[in-house]
Image 1 (cartoon, helix red, strand yellow):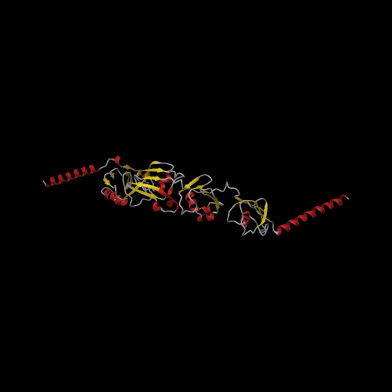
Image 2 (tube, helix red, strand yellow):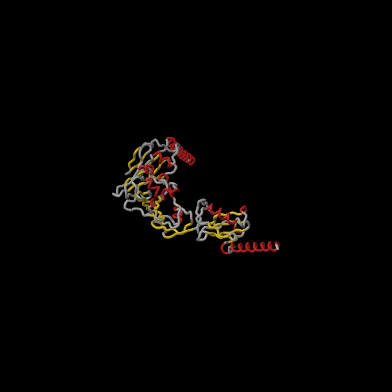
Length: 388
């Protein structure tokens, strides 16, 4: 009798275990098995913060002994793993979600031969409006930065005010200075986008804007009385004015008055509202200084207000064996010839600098001339005597 009761108990326990296992089994369509030809993640995993909050749309790669699955977090924040049941990971940090998954799969798989990794981040929609090349709703991946989104959308219109970008998040309005992010490396200001964000890029106030005129475009920049010409140039072009290759910069005020400054002065010169800063010397008159005489390369050298005659002579390639800068002549205006000090006197646009030959070169030329003349005379005498 006791033997029958023991056999009956074993049979009942086996039936209950089988029933529980059947109830916990997840149909194959809810998880995607992955063969050994696709052991790499579905999307190469970028660096993800361990405090990243897992939510619907995220994908996990599960490496469970000899089985490989890619599962998606459902709308209710759960994932389903075959023979392990339903696991709630929504709202947990990435580290918490991994620990929860490993704990749940330990009933079926050995934790020693199992691993979990986030393979694809969830995506959501954000709205972009204002002075950008593309506007509207855009799908973005979680952990996308504001600068990355704006760059991927093609960037800004020329009239965009990059200093006053507004990110509307719920009831809050977050202001971002894009120039600080990309010019000064202030990455703390580069917001990580969240679902439902609305981004607005305002237009520059054209009534007071300072306009920089380049050969191929005009770029307005918001006026600020604390900015120098060098600051406006950096904001408009993204590079330093001293490395721009410009020989000078022309500033035209609202009243039409003009002045020219060198690039070295740009950091110390401010402009008034509605001014125009011309950063193109190609269309200006008398933008060159012409160099000739005893130089390696006669021609024109771009004008630079900081240069003296010696600088232009050096740019043209004079050598101490052929030329001398002790008696430099300058032709200015209506063929006026003046003597200048090569290291001190001012050179103006349109000047022609003549470098005289050195005494050695002059003596060599006279010697060669006399030798040639004697050769001609002697040859003539020999021919004459031969015919006599």
